[in-house]
Image 1 (cartoon, rainbow, N blue to C red):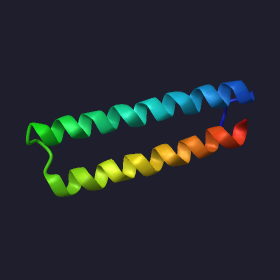
Image 2 (spheres, rainbow, N blue to C red):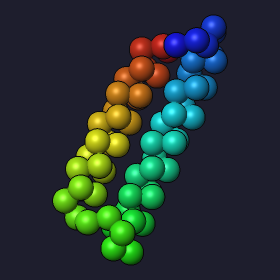
Image 3 (tube, one colour):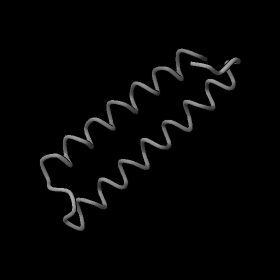
Length: 63
């Protein structure tokens, strides 16, 4: 990670976590309107949950 301070790294990771949540919202919308089918949509949602957990772990490890 190219951020210098713990505060910068934490801020970067919080933004990344928010972007991951945004992606999850877009997947839900895509599934709701029929653009994304159930099988890949559910897999992608699970992946975003796992990524969020990893980001949370990184944030926790910095504090």
